[in-house]
Amino acid sequence: MWRPLLDKELRSLFVQPIAWVLIAVFLLVMGYTFVTNLALTRSASLIRLVFQAAVLLLLFVPLLTMRQFAEERRHGTLELLLATPARERDLVFAKFLAGMTLILAMLVPTLIYPAVLAWHGHPDWGPVYSAYLGLLLLASLLNAIGLALSAMTANQVVAATLAIGLSLLLWMLDTFAAVLPAPWDELVLQLSLLAHFTPFATGAMYLSDGGFFLCGTLLGLFLAVRALGRR
Image (cartoon, rainbow, N blue to C red):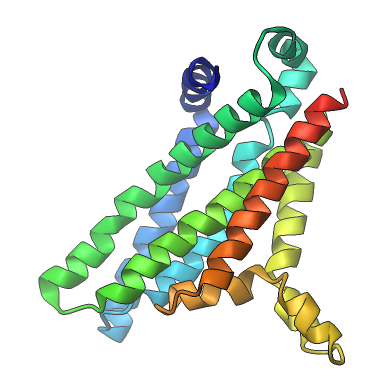
Protein backbone atom coordinates (compact mmCIF):
# COMPACT_ATOMS: atom_id res chain seq x y z
CA MET A 1 0.00 0.00 0.00
CA TRP A 2 2.94 2.30 0.58
CA ARG A 3 4.04 2.30 -3.08
CA PRO A 4 1.19 4.49 -4.41
CA LEU A 5 1.78 6.76 -1.43
CA LEU A 6 5.47 6.94 -2.30
CA ASP A 7 4.66 7.97 -5.88
CA LYS A 8 2.37 10.68 -4.54
CA GLU A 9 4.99 11.92 -2.08
CA LEU A 10 7.73 12.02 -4.71
CA ARG A 11 5.55 14.03 -7.08
CA SER A 12 4.53 16.38 -4.29
CA LEU A 13 8.08 16.77 -3.00
CA PHE A 14 9.83 17.49 -6.27
CA VAL A 15 7.11 19.87 -7.43
CA GLN A 16 7.87 22.12 -4.48
CA PRO A 17 10.54 24.80 -5.10
CA ILE A 18 12.10 24.15 -1.70
CA ALA A 19 13.36 20.74 -2.88
CA TRP A 20 15.30 22.23 -5.78
CA VAL A 21 16.49 25.16 -3.69
CA LEU A 22 17.89 22.80 -1.04
CA ILE A 23 19.67 20.70 -3.69
CA ALA A 24 21.09 23.77 -5.43
CA VAL A 25 22.32 25.46 -2.25
CA PHE A 26 23.79 22.22 -0.91
CA LEU A 27 25.74 21.57 -4.10
CA LEU A 28 26.84 25.21 -4.38
CA VAL A 29 28.25 25.27 -0.85
CA MET A 30 29.87 21.86 -1.23
CA GLY A 31 31.39 22.78 -4.59
CA TYR A 32 32.82 26.03 -3.23
CA THR A 33 34.36 24.22 -0.26
CA PHE A 34 35.84 21.50 -2.44
CA VAL A 35 37.48 23.94 -4.83
CA THR A 36 38.88 26.20 -2.12
CA ASN A 37 40.07 23.27 0.01
CA LEU A 38 41.79 21.66 -2.97
CA ALA A 39 43.44 24.94 -3.97
CA LEU A 40 44.69 25.71 -0.46
CA THR A 41 45.76 22.29 0.81
CA ARG A 42 46.56 20.34 -2.38
CA SER A 43 45.32 17.33 -0.44
CA ALA A 44 43.43 14.28 -1.68
CA SER A 45 41.47 14.08 1.59
CA LEU A 46 37.72 14.70 1.74
CA ILE A 47 37.39 14.71 5.53
CA ARG A 48 36.68 18.43 5.79
CA LEU A 49 34.11 18.18 3.02
CA VAL A 50 32.42 15.22 4.71
CA PHE A 51 32.00 17.05 8.01
CA GLN A 52 30.64 20.08 6.20
CA ALA A 53 28.12 17.88 4.39
CA ALA A 54 27.05 16.48 7.77
CA VAL A 55 26.49 19.97 9.21
CA LEU A 56 24.51 21.01 6.13
CA LEU A 57 22.32 17.94 6.56
CA LEU A 58 21.66 18.99 10.17
CA LEU A 59 20.24 22.24 8.81
CA PHE A 60 18.66 21.14 5.53
CA VAL A 61 16.89 17.89 6.44
CA PRO A 62 14.56 19.62 8.96
CA LEU A 63 13.62 22.09 6.23
CA LEU A 64 12.72 19.10 4.08
CA THR A 65 10.68 17.27 6.71
CA MET A 66 8.92 20.26 8.30
CA ARG A 67 6.06 20.19 5.80
CA GLN A 68 5.65 16.43 5.49
CA PHE A 69 2.85 16.10 8.05
CA ALA A 70 2.44 19.64 9.34
CA GLU A 71 1.28 21.01 5.99
CA GLU A 72 -1.00 18.04 5.37
CA ARG A 73 -2.64 18.66 8.74
CA ARG A 74 -2.95 22.40 8.12
CA HIS A 75 -4.68 21.84 4.77
CA GLY A 76 -6.88 19.06 6.13
CA THR A 77 -5.54 16.41 3.74
CA LEU A 78 -3.97 14.29 6.48
CA GLU A 79 -7.38 13.19 7.75
CA LEU A 80 -8.36 12.19 4.22
CA LEU A 81 -5.21 10.08 3.87
CA LEU A 82 -5.78 8.40 7.21
CA ALA A 83 -9.39 7.67 6.23
CA THR A 84 -8.17 5.51 3.31
CA PRO A 85 -7.11 1.86 3.74
CA ALA A 86 -3.52 3.08 4.09
CA ARG A 87 -2.22 2.65 7.61
CA GLU A 88 -0.17 5.16 9.56
CA ARG A 89 3.01 3.16 9.10
CA ASP A 90 2.51 3.07 5.31
CA LEU A 91 2.21 6.85 5.22
CA VAL A 92 5.26 7.38 7.45
CA PHE A 93 7.33 4.90 5.44
CA ALA A 94 6.35 6.55 2.13
CA LYS A 95 7.28 10.00 3.40
CA PHE A 96 10.55 8.65 4.82
CA LEU A 97 11.52 7.06 1.49
CA ALA A 98 10.57 10.22 -0.40
CA GLY A 99 12.79 12.26 1.91
CA MET A 100 15.70 9.84 1.48
CA THR A 101 15.27 10.08 -2.31
CA LEU A 102 15.71 13.83 -2.16
CA ILE A 103 18.72 13.45 0.15
CA LEU A 104 20.25 11.04 -2.34
CA ALA A 105 19.66 13.64 -5.05
CA MET A 106 21.75 16.00 -2.94
CA LEU A 107 24.57 13.55 -2.20
CA VAL A 108 24.97 11.65 -5.47
CA PRO A 109 26.30 14.65 -7.47
CA THR A 110 29.04 15.10 -4.86
CA LEU A 111 30.55 11.79 -6.00
CA ILE A 112 32.29 13.90 -8.63
CA TYR A 113 34.66 15.15 -5.91
CA PRO A 114 36.35 11.79 -5.20
CA ALA A 115 36.31 11.15 -8.96
CA VAL A 116 38.26 14.39 -9.51
CA LEU A 117 40.73 13.40 -6.79
CA ALA A 118 41.17 9.97 -8.38
CA TRP A 119 41.85 11.64 -11.74
CA HIS A 120 44.60 13.82 -10.32
CA GLY A 121 45.90 11.68 -7.49
CA HIS A 122 45.49 8.55 -5.40
CA PRO A 123 42.87 9.07 -2.68
CA ASP A 124 42.29 6.54 0.07
CA TRP A 125 39.00 4.95 -0.97
CA GLY A 126 38.24 3.34 2.40
CA PRO A 127 37.33 6.65 4.11
CA VAL A 128 35.38 7.71 1.02
CA TYR A 129 33.14 4.64 1.14
CA SER A 130 32.65 4.83 4.90
CA ALA A 131 32.02 8.59 4.78
CA TYR A 132 29.14 8.28 2.32
CA LEU A 133 27.69 5.41 4.32
CA GLY A 134 27.92 7.58 7.42
CA LEU A 135 26.22 10.49 5.66
CA LEU A 136 23.34 8.24 4.59
CA LEU A 137 22.93 6.85 8.10
CA LEU A 138 23.04 10.34 9.60
CA ALA A 139 20.53 11.60 7.04
CA SER A 140 18.16 8.71 7.76
CA LEU A 141 18.20 9.51 11.48
CA LEU A 142 17.64 13.23 10.87
CA ASN A 143 14.85 12.38 8.43
CA ALA A 144 13.12 10.19 11.01
CA ILE A 145 13.49 12.84 13.73
CA GLY A 146 12.03 15.49 11.44
CA LEU A 147 9.08 13.29 10.48
CA ALA A 148 8.30 12.54 14.12
CA LEU A 149 8.31 16.22 15.06
CA SER A 150 6.31 17.17 11.97
CA ALA A 151 3.70 14.58 12.93
CA MET A 152 3.38 16.16 16.38
CA THR A 153 2.62 19.71 15.25
CA ALA A 154 0.54 21.53 12.65
CA ASN A 155 3.03 24.39 12.30
CA GLN A 156 5.85 23.99 9.80
CA VAL A 157 8.06 26.61 11.44
CA VAL A 158 7.71 24.98 14.84
CA ALA A 159 8.47 21.56 13.36
CA ALA A 160 11.59 22.87 11.58
CA THR A 161 12.81 24.81 14.63
CA LEU A 162 12.40 21.84 16.96
CA ALA A 163 14.09 19.48 14.50
CA ILE A 164 17.07 21.79 13.90
CA GLY A 165 17.42 22.47 17.62
CA LEU A 166 17.29 18.79 18.58
CA SER A 167 19.65 17.79 15.77
CA LEU A 168 22.24 20.41 16.75
CA LEU A 169 21.91 19.48 20.42
CA LEU A 170 22.53 15.80 19.67
CA TRP A 171 25.45 16.77 17.40
CA MET A 172 27.15 18.79 20.17
CA LEU A 173 26.50 16.44 23.09
CA ASP A 174 30.14 15.35 23.15
CA THR A 175 31.08 18.85 24.36
CA PHE A 176 28.59 18.60 27.21
CA ALA A 177 29.82 15.09 28.06
CA ALA A 178 33.36 16.43 28.48
CA VAL A 179 32.36 18.41 31.60
CA LEU A 180 30.36 15.61 33.24
CA PRO A 181 31.80 13.21 35.84
CA ALA A 182 31.99 9.48 35.22
CA PRO A 183 29.92 7.49 34.40
CA TRP A 184 27.54 10.20 33.14
CA ASP A 185 30.05 11.43 30.59
CA GLU A 186 30.06 8.08 28.78
CA LEU A 187 26.28 7.79 28.92
CA VAL A 188 25.79 11.22 27.36
CA LEU A 189 28.55 10.60 24.82
CA GLN A 190 26.66 7.56 23.56
CA LEU A 191 23.90 9.92 22.36
CA SER A 192 26.24 12.25 20.45
CA LEU A 193 25.75 12.26 16.68
CA LEU A 194 29.25 13.63 16.18
CA ALA A 195 30.84 10.88 18.27
CA HIS A 196 29.13 8.18 16.21
CA PHE A 197 29.65 9.91 12.86
CA THR A 198 33.37 10.69 13.23
CA PRO A 199 34.55 7.05 12.78
CA PHE A 200 32.67 6.87 9.47
CA ALA A 201 34.24 10.15 8.30
CA THR A 202 37.74 8.92 9.13
CA GLY A 203 37.39 5.48 7.59
CA ALA A 204 36.85 3.45 10.77
CA MET A 205 33.45 1.77 10.73
CA TYR A 206 32.10 0.12 13.85
CA LEU A 207 28.96 -1.96 14.16
CA SER A 208 27.95 -0.06 17.30
CA ASP A 209 27.94 3.27 15.45
CA GLY A 210 25.87 1.89 12.59
CA GLY A 211 23.50 0.32 15.11
CA PHE A 212 23.08 3.66 16.84
CA PHE A 213 21.91 5.38 13.66
CA LEU A 214 19.64 2.51 12.65
CA CYS A 215 18.04 2.25 16.09
CA GLY A 216 17.58 6.02 16.21
CA THR A 217 15.93 5.95 12.78
CA LEU A 218 13.54 3.18 13.81
CA LEU A 219 12.70 5.03 17.02
CA GLY A 220 11.94 8.22 15.10
CA LEU A 221 9.69 6.37 12.65
CA PHE A 222 7.93 4.61 15.52
CA LEU A 223 7.25 7.93 17.24
CA ALA A 224 5.91 9.37 13.98
CA VAL A 225 3.50 6.45 13.61
CA ARG A 226 2.40 6.80 17.23
CA ALA A 227 1.89 10.55 16.81
CA LEU A 228 -0.40 9.92 13.82
CA GLY A 229 -2.25 7.17 15.67
CA ARG A 230 -3.17 9.53 18.49
CA ARG A 231 -4.90 11.96 16.11
